[in-house]
Image 1 (cartoon, rainbow, N blue to C red):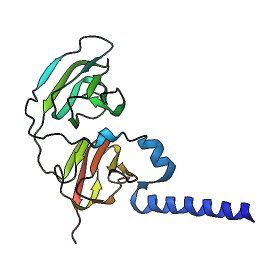
Image 2 (spheres, rainbow, N blue to C red; image 1 turned 180 degrees about the vertical axis):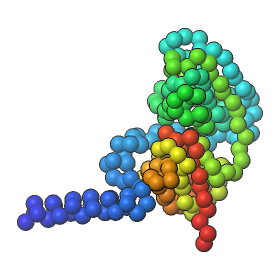
Image 3 (cartoon, rainbow, N blue to C red; image 1 turned 45 degrees about the vertical axis):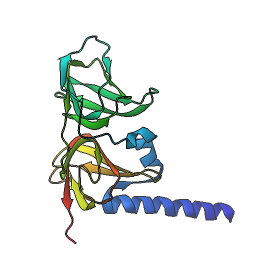
Length: 218
Protein backbone atom coordinates (compact mmCIF):
# COMPACT_ATOMS: atom_id res chain seq x y z
CA UNK A 1 0.00 0.00 0.00
CA UNK A 2 2.86 2.39 0.77
CA UNK A 3 4.40 1.68 -2.63
CA UNK A 4 1.13 2.31 -4.42
CA UNK A 5 0.57 5.51 -2.49
CA UNK A 6 4.04 6.80 -3.37
CA UNK A 7 3.55 5.94 -7.03
CA UNK A 8 0.24 7.80 -7.07
CA UNK A 9 1.82 10.96 -5.59
CA UNK A 10 4.58 10.96 -8.18
CA UNK A 11 2.09 10.56 -10.98
CA UNK A 12 0.07 13.45 -9.62
CA UNK A 13 3.12 15.70 -9.39
CA UNK A 14 4.17 14.85 -12.95
CA UNK A 15 0.66 15.50 -14.19
CA UNK A 16 0.62 18.88 -12.45
CA UNK A 17 3.96 19.84 -14.06
CA UNK A 18 2.64 18.89 -17.50
CA UNK A 19 -0.49 20.96 -16.90
CA UNK A 20 1.53 24.02 -15.84
CA UNK A 21 3.62 23.76 -19.01
CA UNK A 22 0.62 23.19 -21.29
CA UNK A 23 -1.19 26.21 -19.84
CA UNK A 24 1.68 28.70 -19.78
CA UNK A 25 4.90 27.13 -21.19
CA UNK A 26 6.45 27.26 -17.73
CA UNK A 27 9.06 24.59 -16.99
CA UNK A 28 9.15 23.49 -13.35
CA UNK A 29 10.78 20.96 -11.04
CA UNK A 30 14.01 19.14 -11.78
CA UNK A 31 13.86 19.98 -15.50
CA UNK A 32 13.88 23.69 -14.62
CA UNK A 33 16.78 23.20 -12.21
CA UNK A 34 18.82 21.30 -14.81
CA UNK A 35 18.30 24.01 -17.44
CA UNK A 36 19.03 26.97 -15.14
CA UNK A 37 21.72 25.32 -13.04
CA UNK A 38 23.07 26.81 -9.82
CA UNK A 39 22.25 30.49 -9.41
CA UNK A 40 25.23 32.31 -7.95
CA UNK A 41 24.28 35.10 -5.47
CA UNK A 42 26.43 37.61 -7.38
CA UNK A 43 23.99 37.39 -10.30
CA UNK A 44 21.72 39.64 -8.21
CA UNK A 45 24.32 42.43 -8.28
CA UNK A 46 22.93 45.79 -9.37
CA UNK A 47 25.61 48.38 -10.07
CA UNK A 48 25.53 52.16 -10.09
CA UNK A 49 23.85 52.79 -13.43
CA UNK A 50 25.44 56.24 -13.87
CA UNK A 51 28.31 54.41 -15.66
CA UNK A 52 30.88 56.78 -14.22
CA UNK A 53 34.22 55.55 -15.50
CA UNK A 54 32.67 53.08 -17.96
CA UNK A 55 34.19 53.50 -21.42
CA UNK A 56 33.78 51.96 -24.87
CA UNK A 57 36.36 49.35 -25.79
CA UNK A 58 37.02 47.79 -29.18
CA UNK A 59 39.91 45.76 -30.46
CA UNK A 60 41.25 42.59 -32.04
CA UNK A 61 41.43 39.32 -30.12
CA UNK A 62 45.05 39.13 -28.90
CA UNK A 63 45.31 35.30 -28.86
CA UNK A 64 43.60 32.32 -30.47
CA UNK A 65 42.78 31.05 -26.98
CA UNK A 66 40.64 34.10 -26.19
CA UNK A 67 41.09 36.85 -23.64
CA UNK A 68 40.04 37.82 -20.11
CA UNK A 69 39.18 41.46 -19.37
CA UNK A 70 38.08 43.47 -16.35
CA UNK A 71 36.04 46.65 -16.56
CA UNK A 72 35.12 49.65 -14.48
CA UNK A 73 31.80 49.12 -12.73
CA UNK A 74 28.89 49.82 -15.06
CA UNK A 75 26.24 48.43 -17.34
CA UNK A 76 27.55 47.12 -20.66
CA UNK A 77 26.52 45.51 -23.94
CA UNK A 78 29.12 42.88 -24.91
CA UNK A 79 29.61 41.45 -28.39
CA UNK A 80 32.22 40.30 -30.88
CA UNK A 81 32.86 39.14 -34.43
CA UNK A 82 32.22 36.62 -35.85
CA UNK A 83 30.83 34.59 -32.87
CA UNK A 84 31.90 32.92 -29.67
CA UNK A 85 31.16 32.38 -26.00
CA UNK A 86 31.16 35.16 -23.42
CA UNK A 87 31.66 34.05 -19.80
CA UNK A 88 31.21 36.31 -16.75
CA UNK A 89 32.97 35.28 -13.51
CA UNK A 90 32.99 36.68 -9.99
CA UNK A 91 36.17 37.65 -8.11
CA UNK A 92 36.72 34.00 -7.10
CA UNK A 93 36.39 32.76 -10.70
CA UNK A 94 32.94 31.27 -10.12
CA UNK A 95 30.87 31.34 -13.31
CA UNK A 96 27.87 33.67 -13.10
CA UNK A 97 26.49 33.20 -16.62
CA UNK A 98 27.45 32.43 -20.19
CA UNK A 99 25.96 33.21 -23.59
CA UNK A 100 26.83 32.51 -27.21
CA UNK A 101 27.11 35.96 -28.79
CA UNK A 102 28.06 37.28 -32.19
CA UNK A 103 27.13 38.26 -35.70
CA UNK A 104 27.26 34.76 -37.20
CA UNK A 105 25.85 32.55 -34.42
CA UNK A 106 24.08 33.29 -31.14
CA UNK A 107 22.69 36.55 -29.80
CA UNK A 108 23.76 39.93 -31.23
CA UNK A 109 24.69 41.29 -27.78
CA UNK A 110 24.77 40.35 -24.09
CA UNK A 111 23.72 43.15 -21.71
CA UNK A 112 24.45 43.01 -17.98
CA UNK A 113 25.62 44.86 -14.89
CA UNK A 114 29.37 44.32 -14.53
CA UNK A 115 31.06 44.97 -11.19
CA UNK A 116 34.74 45.90 -11.23
CA UNK A 117 35.47 42.66 -9.32
CA UNK A 118 34.01 40.56 -12.16
CA UNK A 119 36.04 39.23 -15.07
CA UNK A 120 34.80 38.62 -18.61
CA UNK A 121 36.22 35.92 -20.85
CA UNK A 122 35.78 36.11 -24.63
CA UNK A 123 36.73 32.76 -26.16
CA UNK A 124 38.84 32.18 -29.25
CA UNK A 125 35.84 32.28 -31.60
CA UNK A 126 36.21 36.05 -31.87
CA UNK A 127 38.46 38.05 -34.15
CA UNK A 128 37.35 41.36 -32.59
CA UNK A 129 35.52 42.33 -29.41
CA UNK A 130 33.27 45.33 -28.67
CA UNK A 131 32.28 46.54 -25.18
CA UNK A 132 29.76 49.38 -24.98
CA UNK A 133 28.42 51.18 -21.88
CA UNK A 134 24.62 51.39 -22.11
CA UNK A 135 22.13 53.83 -20.62
CA UNK A 136 19.35 52.65 -18.35
CA UNK A 137 15.86 53.17 -19.73
CA UNK A 138 12.53 51.43 -19.28
CA UNK A 139 11.49 49.13 -22.10
CA UNK A 140 9.09 46.31 -22.93
CA UNK A 141 11.51 44.73 -25.40
CA UNK A 142 14.39 43.01 -23.63
CA UNK A 143 17.37 41.54 -25.46
CA UNK A 144 19.68 38.77 -24.28
CA UNK A 145 21.06 39.59 -20.84
CA UNK A 146 20.02 40.34 -17.28
CA UNK A 147 17.51 43.08 -16.48
CA UNK A 148 16.18 44.67 -13.28
CA UNK A 149 12.45 44.97 -12.68
CA UNK A 150 11.88 48.58 -11.69
CA UNK A 151 14.92 49.89 -13.59
CA UNK A 152 14.77 48.27 -17.02
CA UNK A 153 11.11 47.21 -17.13
CA UNK A 154 8.12 48.29 -15.06
CA UNK A 155 6.63 45.87 -12.53
CA UNK A 156 3.33 44.40 -13.69
CA UNK A 157 1.60 41.58 -15.50
CA UNK A 158 2.71 40.79 -19.04
CA UNK A 159 2.28 38.42 -21.93
CA UNK A 160 5.70 37.43 -23.28
CA UNK A 161 6.48 36.23 -26.79
CA UNK A 162 9.17 36.24 -29.48
CA UNK A 163 8.74 36.93 -33.21
CA UNK A 164 11.05 34.09 -34.23
CA UNK A 165 13.60 31.66 -32.84
CA UNK A 166 13.70 29.76 -29.56
CA UNK A 167 14.88 30.62 -26.05
CA UNK A 168 14.05 31.16 -22.41
CA UNK A 169 13.03 33.81 -19.90
CA UNK A 170 14.11 33.31 -16.30
CA UNK A 171 12.55 35.32 -13.47
CA UNK A 172 14.94 35.36 -10.52
CA UNK A 173 14.30 36.52 -6.95
CA UNK A 174 16.62 36.14 -3.99
CA UNK A 175 15.46 33.45 -1.56
CA UNK A 176 12.83 32.02 -3.92
CA UNK A 177 12.73 29.33 -6.60
CA UNK A 178 13.32 30.75 -10.08
CA UNK A 179 10.67 30.70 -12.78
CA UNK A 180 11.52 29.45 -16.27
CA UNK A 181 9.47 30.02 -19.42
CA UNK A 182 10.16 28.39 -22.78
CA UNK A 183 9.71 30.64 -25.81
CA UNK A 184 9.04 29.57 -29.38
CA UNK A 185 8.54 31.96 -32.29
CA UNK A 186 6.65 31.64 -35.55
CA UNK A 187 3.08 32.10 -36.73
CA UNK A 188 2.17 28.42 -36.40
CA UNK A 189 4.45 27.31 -33.55
CA UNK A 190 4.69 30.51 -31.51
CA UNK A 191 4.10 30.40 -27.76
CA UNK A 192 2.83 33.00 -25.31
CA UNK A 193 3.22 33.03 -21.53
CA UNK A 194 1.76 35.26 -18.84
CA UNK A 195 4.22 36.48 -16.21
CA UNK A 196 4.09 38.73 -13.19
CA UNK A 197 7.10 40.97 -12.57
CA UNK A 198 7.79 42.45 -9.14
CA UNK A 199 10.10 45.25 -8.05
CA UNK A 200 13.58 43.94 -7.31
CA UNK A 201 13.39 40.78 -9.41
CA UNK A 202 15.89 39.98 -12.15
CA UNK A 203 14.79 38.92 -15.62
CA UNK A 204 17.28 36.88 -17.61
CA UNK A 205 16.71 36.55 -21.35
CA UNK A 206 18.84 33.73 -22.76
CA UNK A 207 19.34 31.98 -26.11
CA UNK A 208 17.03 34.42 -27.89
CA UNK A 209 17.71 37.87 -29.38
CA UNK A 210 14.69 39.74 -28.04
CA UNK A 211 11.53 39.13 -25.98
CA UNK A 212 8.41 41.29 -26.20
CA UNK A 213 6.61 42.05 -22.94
CA UNK A 214 3.02 43.09 -23.68
CA UNK A 215 1.29 44.65 -20.62
CA UNK A 216 -1.93 42.87 -19.66
CA UNK A 217 -4.96 45.15 -19.47
CA UNK A 218 -6.52 44.80 -16.03
